Image 1: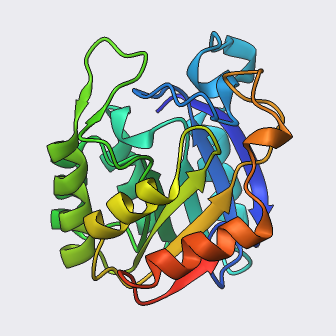
Image 2: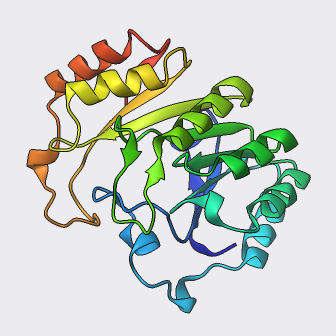
Length: 230
């Protein structure tokens, strides 16, 4: 595991739980509104890498005080040793939440088969048929659909979420995403916030207003049981 960030405590990232947050390095997408460019397009410096020994030493010390471990990124499913890493965490008795962009159904299925993740969070980024980004190979939308189906049908608990960026997303996008995740139990709308992003040109004009976010929520409520603006 290439771990390029570690937050010892969070009350926001695992619903109802006290968790620590592990950031893996690298991603197979290049979303211009990504707030973690240091994990995606910037070189991974050796001095910034957190060892697994550091993580597990901390987890052993915090047993009884910490409920869960959240693994995020970057994109964790591109890490070749993700599964054995999760197994080690589970052996210590922790809950595990895994964040994913839903582009690696082979790994998602393996993890679901093993039942080693307690909560899934998948970012459903667009409504287009193909994720056309700055990639060596475009991501087929069928792969996104496959991951959504797997998580909906087999995850112990889960959420889908989308960061809405004006200029990239529209109400038509909302309908497309809604149809894609129809019947899901939980969906979060996240408004774009300017700051440190892959595309530094994005700014406050790319954020939606509260009124617009409520319109998005109304549309999504036709497709999903629980919709919230986060």
